[in-house]
Image (cartoon, rainbow, N blue to C red; front, side, top):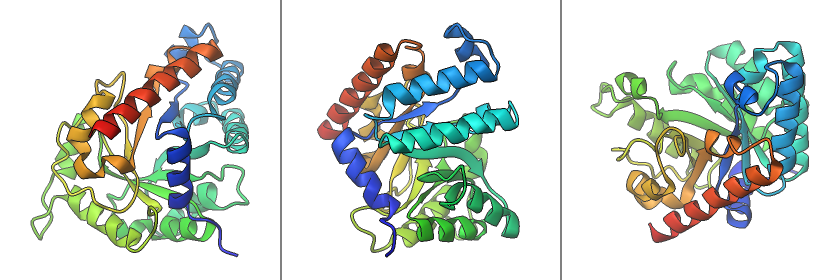
Length: 279
């Protein structure tokens, strides 16, 4: 029996829990602000607190792999435990790894995050397409086989991204639009939502692209990066109902108190629901 596709699972989670994604970004200054040491013990305490506070109520938790990898194997062990516990509590886990390579190497990345037998198996992973969209095929195929998802970088929230993403392809489309069109082709016919998503920054003002990919749109940039939930309709237009807004520091800065984390997540979720409904 084929596993239920990620797009269907995500749509259900968004409809029942709201569309909010909370990033788990345990950088050193945040650990310090929580009164924790910037070491594995501090990392473990921080991560456990976030997962226990939020995994039973938000649709998506998005650990940033780099902040765990910096501690070597012990940090990755903390990440493995967080993935397991978050998924057990009902949150979908989006691994923010932004992997991109070719051939067997891309296949190895796919096996790391998209093979159910891997200790880092996640509901979805972020990938970079700028070695060519075809280079993502091992990840796309692995995700389809396991009922997982892939979020492809398209129009990111960092200003430097424009020099690549807004560049013009041979046929006159921007590279970002070319990638979005590839995603739409992957999602063709999927219902209620495709499993190949795009990463589109909420800080863009106007995406200036066709975002009708029949898939989810991960929107980083809300909170500390300057975007607000009220900005979402202007950026995403008719596709705003498929947006998964991502907040990290705006929620995490309310720790280490679990009640503070929950209150911040609930506030953002309410503001997002209102903005999407009005949009």
